Image (cartoon, rainbow, N blue to C red; front, side, top):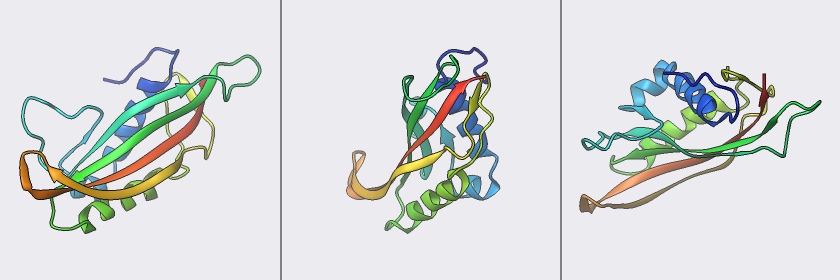
Length: 149
C-alpha cells in the first residue's frame, strides 16, 4: 500500500522506487523479488533486490519556504550464482533504470534528473547458511532531491 501522508519523503520515495523497479520486465526476469524489507518467515530465494537504510537530510533543498531535502538510500542485490556475473547484470540494469529517472513520489516533488548513484560496487562474502559457498552482493547508494508538493 502506498504511503499517502506528507512530511518525511522516505516511505513515499521507497514505495515509488520499488514500484518503478517492479514495472521493468527485464529486471523482474532477473530476480525473484524486489523488497523494501526481506521477509523473515522463510529463506528468500536468490537472486533478489533489497532497498534499505533510507535517510532524509531536510536542510539541503527546498526553496520559498517549502520543506525538502536530500534523500539517500541503499540498493543491494544478492545472488548465490557461481561468480559475480549475475549480480553485475542485475546491478547494471538497476543503474540503467534509475540514473536520472523522474519518479512520482506521492505528496512530494522530486527535482528533475536529481536521482543519481554515488556508490556502485560488488563483492563476495561467505553464505552464513552454507559456509563452503559464496554470496555475491551488488551495492549502490542512490540520492535524490525531494520537496513537499
